[in-house]
Length: 225
Image 1 (cartoon, rainbow, N blue to C red):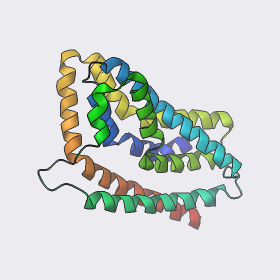
Image 2 (cartoon, rainbow, N blue to C red):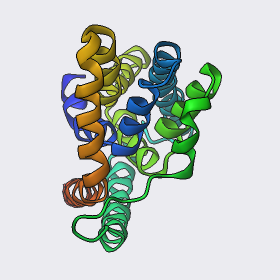
Image 3 (cartoon, rainbow, N blue to C red):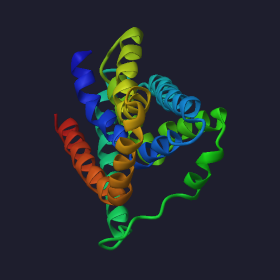
């Protein structure tokens, strides 16, 4: 199980490094409903990863991915395809980057965060963590790895939980700052938001390239072994 956790670690880190959700949670933490909305967002994020991950594991078991006879080859193909998709996404991100000195425009839904209720905050986080295309691709890669590792049901559940916790660290961090730093929290979170807003596109492009090549390398290695 330890080896499997090590193999899915890059996928979890890839999900954790998601500038837009981090900006969203920071914006929520400077609204009048900061505590309730922030905690709801964090819970929704974790549950989104767990629910979608569990569904993917069930699908993998149904498809026979956990069988040693064909699981390794199928997992390698999945990794290879996901790597190619991430490289394509990296090229799109890089072409859409703002000019020097400009800030990439924020999604329209971010402008409405001030009026979000607790259920809306939960639902948004669930969608961003579980259904967001980039996160979904990385989740598929992680669950394919878990399914093909020959783990028991209990070990798969523990590995999925570790995966979700690691992938949620960057969402939990702003909430932790808000709850523990008092008056300094606004300044700290504001600095994080400004940096992420300026460098969002570049961060995502680099992230896609790195993980794209990692997955392609793993896929080729799996097919040639």
